[in-house]
Image (cartoon, rainbow, N blue to C red):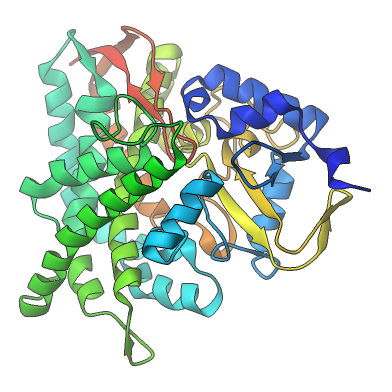
Length: 431
């Protein structure tokens, strides 16, 4: 049977590559829902993009994520980008990832070696040592919220962005005075097609080559900053991740400059942005469902489940791409060697076969088998830290809250890759 027998309708394929649609969460999930019901493993054909399989079911995303022998990260672009953008990145940097070689860009023994460098920093026993420091920051963050008692604030920009940013920058070793720089670069990197977040005067969504140049400019800014950090930590080592990366050796060989930069960038961006998105969605839920707050106040032991459900609903990593390295079959469809696949985490986390009432915010899901942190060898290295940060924040906040009122619509960023709420106006009435 030909691939064309499994092709998605043109309007469905177009939604999946249109960054602006990802800002319209209702349209995005309507598209995912249609695909799960009618063509759960369909092929998207779009002008200017290489064809790719769209994986929308929880079971299929799980299977592919676990099978790293057949489906690899590093063989082709891990972000669904226009063909011309990828070609330009390769032409200028020699890599379809723009000269960055991070954990998400490698497989097998290379991935295992790189992951082992910092894994101990992010395991539950290690992050427990940070409990007091993070709880203190959480308490000060709640004090800031209380200072605006009853006034309209943008929770996404004033609270959710800065709390996890400070935590991860402290662990990485970036000084407080540079945090705003890292936040701006993160927003520009992930929001390259969002009119509000992108770097001024650059990257027209209709110009794939401009997007490549834009990405390379941001990578160059990260490189310039972290080259100075590396030089400093080699001369003046400290107890932080930057010192570890500046001097990292695997099997007696120093890691490459691209691998070091990739490590810095993934920690300095995804290490806080995804947590910010989930934190904002958790706050939205408290305003949208008033019955949640008294339940959590009466039983704080439910807060971890509340956090897990917020992460499921947020699904801040919209997709990752995989490349098949051998012929295989999924759902009766022939996947050929070299085929590109989009793992749609937001769709998997609303799959009716995996979650009862998947569009409901339900803190009683137990276990909550969402895939927002990925699965398999590439599961998010910082998942335990992210959940801890959110738990501590809401443990400090919930006893002091009287009620939360939504003061406007939650608006989402226009990003195919990583995104979430960019504005969330609320009124918080606090003790």
